[in-house]
Length: 106
Image (cartoon, rainbow, N blue to C red; front, side, top):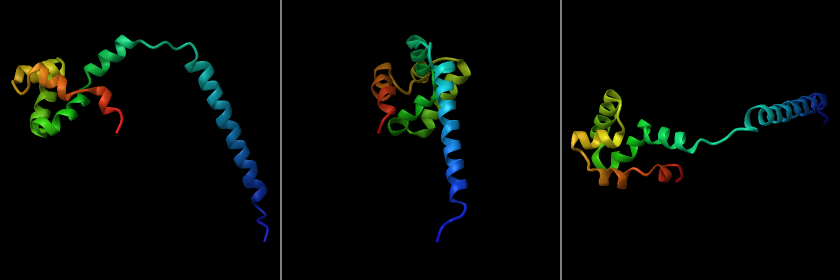
């Protein structure tokens, strides 16, 4: 049996591929090319990110980690400073537990 709609499906598939191709080239040309990496800003954003507190859960528990995050947000300080102020961790302990580069892969 021949599917009479097969030519229409193939036409639409090829059209979709062409659209994705054109869109990706436009994205590269107008958005990606010429971009520069601001490593200092990236490191500051990462350091100040509250999501890093999840690395502390296995070591100090969810409740204490949440206290650190809420305190840091309220006082507009880093998680490290918050943990030290609350007396839940020393700076060395925080640095040992929170390693963003190890949180980005399995």
